Length: 431
Ligand code: BGC
Image (cartoon, rainbow, N blue to C red; front, side):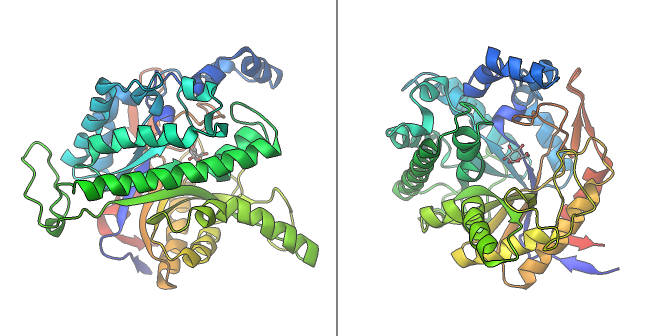
């Protein structure tokens, strides 16, 4: 049986986002989920609106310790989660210390279990006051976002060294919110889309600079020679290095875009592929320390071209064509930016667990191969640790390594999670 060994220090884990797991949020999405227009739209599509209101989600705001116990039991050593801006700054300029303390406790709970926190500062949702000002269409959005980032990072700088500013801000968010009208505020306006893109890139760059400034001004208390401390209840060791190795990245979604088989199709396909996969990394360059890559499937939106790439056998419950080799091609293509790459999401949304471990293993094989061919890949984070509220598709979508019973909030570890746990423990893929 072939054995594929991953580089020493490779990080294994899973990812979540605040709105999808915490419960009881109050942001622009919770408003939208309950708006008459949204409910009407769901009714027209014959869908049960209850499935599309995030409500208590997984109740992880209260159950995060239990979730992290499971992650530890599954041998995971990194965990990506997001901070909910609307909790930290519920009203313009009013920062909520209690909520900040909550996230400090969350980070401490991870460190106590020997799990490295990777924090996303923005994962699709906005405070209501910010959305009312036009969100990222507002010329001042960079100022608002950077102020929030500064507050959070100053409070966590001693405990965290991996930050992600935005999740899929241009690859998914701006196009879904402003171009094709699937995310709130459901606009379809190419000029707004371009404006949001520009403001998002600008906001990332300013936030990046701000975070670097905070860490340089006041080096965090990590003993880098000995690695991150695992218990925050013990006093911090005296730092041996004067500047902290904080790494600030961006996460974007990439897909295997099927391009054309003639000149015109190739040009159009490449242009689409640029916006789909490379826009943010190009525009924000060089202001990021790593690339966060979310990879799920093939994208045939522009060209079907089954003669270029035949249809794949495995199609997920979200109708995504699964193509593990695509992650290899994306990783090699992203080498052009010469930055380390963290795989920050990869997963399958099926209710049954049947295809999950094969999905993981097949992708890991191609990641391993990309590493052999020179891609600097540092981590694999499965999406998601838990079943959760799929941002516009509701609760019936089940990505979790852990199944959630939404009546009792009981957590049940799926068989695939135990198989993945062996890979995490051994740092080796054995297929
Ligand atoms: C997002 C997640 C989402 C996942 C599965 C990514 O686009 O970052 O929030 O749940 O894909 O659709």
